[in-house]
Image 1 (cartoon, rainbow, N blue to C red):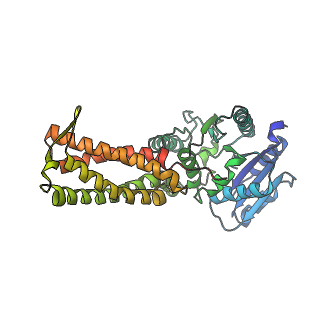
Image 2 (cartoon, rainbow, N blue to C red):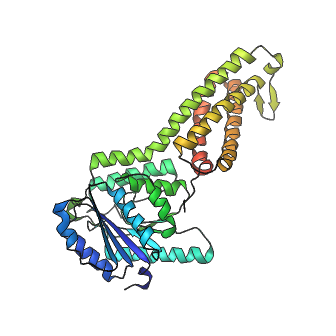
Image 3 (cartoon, helix red, strand yellow):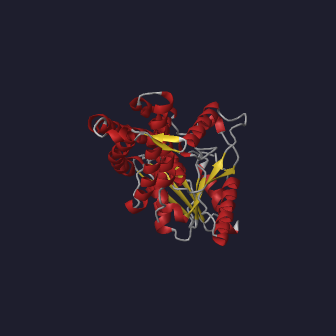
Amino acid sequence: MQSDAKDTAVLIPSFHPDHRLAPYVRALLEAGLGKIVVVDDGSGPDSLPFFDSITPHERLEVIHYQPNRGKGVALKRGMEYLRDHCPDCAYIITADSDGQHTVPDVLRMCEELHRFGDAASEEKTQPVGMLLGSRDFSQPHVPNKSRTGNRITSVVFRLLYGRWVQDTQTGLRGFSRELLPAMIAVKGDRYEYEMNMLIFCATSKTPIRALPIETVYENNNEGSHFRAVRDSARIYGVIFAGFFRFISSSALSFLVDYGTYRLLNFLLLKGAIPSLEKWIHLGMFNLLPRIAIATALARLVSGTVNFLVNKRFVFDHSGPVGKSLPRYLGVFFLIMTLSAVLTSNLHLWLGWSENAVKIPVDILLFFLSYLLQRKWVFLKEIPH
């Protein structure tokens, strides 16, 4: 029995288990884990013998419900139980019941969680965060669909969220009790829930660490309940959802911005005030006042629309406006200044129409704005 396992709980979501479930639970209990929670995700009467074969134990809880709701719901049901009934469990490890996560790997994760936790407590460094059991997909016995799918997902996740996660679909995950409220609040009912966990960590600056584990695939992973097309669509829908919402929000803001800019630049300012047609030299740069004023006023209108839409619908940010608004204004003025300066100078250097050159300029600034808003303006707080 490991002494540092006594304050660690293992949560096992299970749907249509087989003969491996009971021996696995027994081995975890014998290894000294403080609490084992098995969640029957609406498996139905045919699976009851497998759950009934688990020998009752004071450190074991089996939760049943009907109908099947999905892995995400099962995990959150188990977390709610640990939150309400197991105050002594300082760490939580989630593991699958299909034989992929060995008891030795669970114990190694337990050791790593305590090591990070002790270091964070003594040195007041970053919190434990999320510890992922990372499989080696280069091994020859790994199914091609698993190898290819994980690699593609890892690359896409890095591009959109700036964090490299080698094994995005691992079910062996560990975190400290402080993250329970945040994990329970994460959206998702089925396999997409686990991706949402990673997205939450990436967007809240919660550390994501990897722990190499044994790569187990029995019978070409035929025991998995993962539905390749439907569940993959859910997962990629989750990965791209925030970015697509940002694109939609930015498209709306661009229409407001460009419409207001043209209205001001051509109908109200051009020719109305001759002094606005004189170039202002700023070192190596030049600025046309008419373009600068039209850009500033148009960006003020579109920026207000963009902030409200992004806060509520794009980044789902519930933090105080008093914190996010000043940061947004900082990004707002930076992008606005870059837009005015770049538009003016490209118009002067290349001879392009000031209206035409504004489009590629703002497309480039769009990506910069997304990066700054995701990583700084609407950084999510960890709920307690």
